[in-house]
Image 1 (tube, one colour):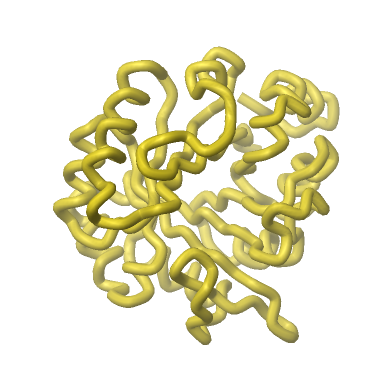
Image 2 (image 1 turned 45 degrees about the horizontal axis):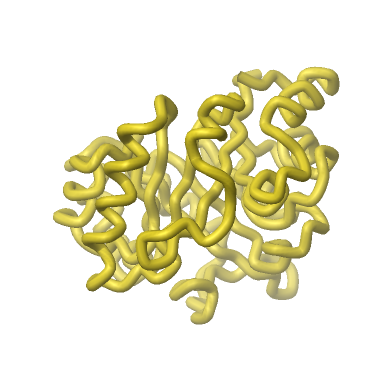
Length: 237
């Protein structure tokens, strides 16, 4: 079994981290990667975002992903040139699926993370865009499979039903997508305990777990998570 990754997520608004500790701490504690989401994501704020990316790149030694309002090749080029390792694309990919193919061909699949925000609908999950405000009618599992075919190297899968609840990841959704694709799937939305993280890997078959509040408010540390996982025979880096 491949080692599992623990990835803190930091929300950035107008160039400032909205919540959380200093990102350098996560590097020291053993986080495998960082994800930055620009939750304002307007084009006018992009310059500020690039400043944040540069500061992070100079401060940490782990890979990090930047997402939010990325809708063209030039923006990806600017973000990666500023020091990010990957970009996360969501709404733009649904509006123009060829964007996945073009960006993957230009920068490599390893740089392109397809973010999928999904909400339960009857017996499946529907994909939403625009920060979870707009339903698309797309089935999340089918969209994940198509994204992989188009060249995405990884999927960041957020359960909108679980996000912010601390009631646990949507394990059925996570397993359905993880089993449907061969690229890594990052589980996101709902982590509230060490047990939830363990379940994302053991039951949900995820490759990585994204964490926000649980780490930001120091309820657990990355080291505690990894020690817990190893004790449960889940290989952690």
